[in-house]
Image 1 (cartoon, rainbow, N blue to C red):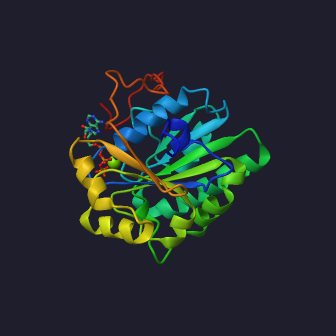
Image 2 (cartoon, rainbow, N blue to C red):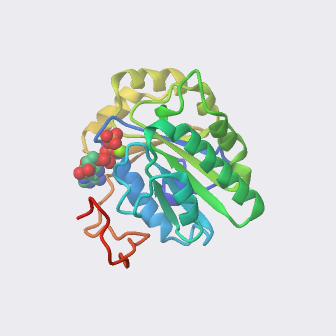
Image 3 (tube, rainbow, N blue to C red):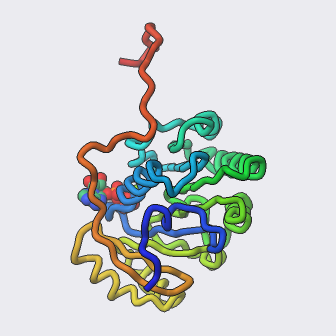
Length: 249
Ligand SMILES: Nc1ncnc2c1ncn2[C@@H]1O[C@H](COP(=O)(O)OP(=O)(O)OP(=O)(O)O)[C@@H](O)[C@H]1O
Ligand SMILES: [Mg+2]
């Protein structure tokens, strides 16, 4: 049996394992809900040191707002990171590549400067940046050098990332219901009986599985329970200015 998937296993840095964890599943199967609630738990857990940061880079602008009020660019995100344990960035599509480069550069700088610092970077819709043929140098650097600095990278996508290079840097794949071509891909690449797995996942909506790529163990998980109150990790600041801005209600 492989190790049980806890927020620390899914999100924490582990200096003995590859830095990347992949999360796949077709739309609406509960990826974001599971990740969002795992981060909420992790942010309150002692498994993560006081200088650990969870940074969500989300070009979809969808589903992590209950953790922290999102900011629109990396510059603002970096300022928040000084104090806030969770930072949600909603970049614009047209400069998302450059923003991601800046963010990774910053995480490396801090990790080099302060050995107590560690971080989890979650990239939503990661096929925006990664394809079989091309991977930005910043992501390559993160995946290869990150783990010795206490950094971990979650690549979240609706489809399996068709990148062998990424696979070599990955510790695990967390799967929700899969697109049909991806079942074949996982079988060919990892010997994972993905048809069987998907059938089992279809029995319980929002359930998921975790495939450890080192031990090649597969384990199944019940759907995450969404808390009645999704208490933010970073509270929204009250407005103190008394003039309203134009267009604001
Ligand atoms: N564990 C769960 N329990 C109850 N409802 C859930 C659960 N997971 C997801 N849902 C419901 O399904 C909706 C879609 O889930 P979610 O946004 O996590 O999907 P997703 O896999 O991230 O999809 P996409 O790829 O489109 O981003 C949620 O808004 C929520 O209403
Ligand atoms: Mg989602």
